Amino acid sequence: MKILGMEGMTPADVSREVERGARFVIFQYCVSIIVLTFKRPSHIYFVRGGQSRVIKGLPFAAVSLLFGWWGIPWGPIHTVTSLTTDFQGGKDVTQHVLASLQQTPSRR
Image (cartoon, rainbow, N blue to C red; front, side, top):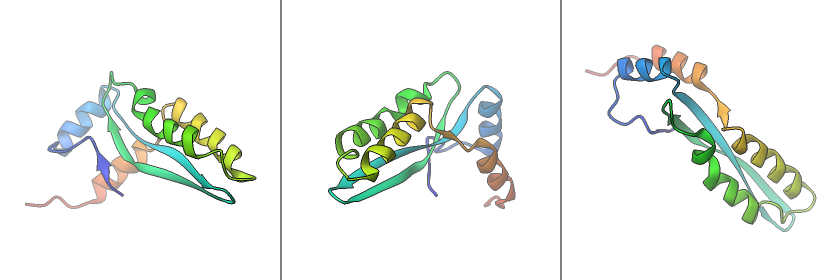
């Protein structure tokens, strides 16, 4: 899965940022087409300490608000769950990403 927001950072830079409160998060969005509803995760976002995770999630919340609730019956249900996730700052996957980054051999 693609990680956005950590371009050009070394593993040491990432570790320092995480110690300062940075987090890796996934947001959700929902799109409905009458009887079909799709609830999808975003790419992983690296949100530095001091940045608002809720602000980063607003575009995904907007998509869900505009396009998610149309589907019957799952549209309203998935829209509410997506909005809840986004307004809570996304799903924190920091520990999983850090573990994955430690297992990945560095390129020289």
